[in-house]
Amino acid sequence: MKQLIIIIATLLLNSTVFAAATPSHQIDGVWEVRYDASNTPSSHIRITTQKNGELIGVIEEAYPRPGENPSPNCTKCEGANKDKPIVGMTVLWGMMPDGTNQWSQGHVLNAENGKIYSGKMTLSKDGKTLDLRGYVFQPVFGATSTWHKIK
Image (cartoon, rainbow, N blue to C red):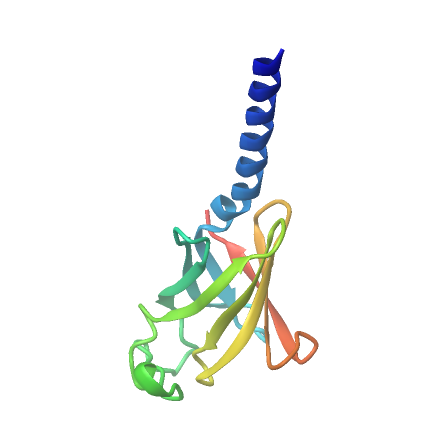
């Protein structure tokens, strides 16, 4: 009887760990970010989950607006990113799991204005959209961008 209880407890623990890990598997991949006004693609960002659970997002492709530099650099960035190419730049880091389908404690770089914001994210239940909230001080002082998963 004792062995049966241990087996059942082990199975329950393993299924709980698997369920908690599922959102990370859903969030890993390429996400399309769109310009607000025109709803056209601005970039593709690859999100990967690190061994410690942290999410990292790197720009894989950029889609400048007509008339803009086809190979944009982050001219408004400061520090190490100043004037660096946007493609290949890490723009999302430090996001840690914060419940089911949620991550927080992270940072996001807006390559258009060069500013770094605190961030939190929520993955939709179907895994197709991701709401990223960038903010200063508190989430109420920010804006949300919805990213779309690319298959």
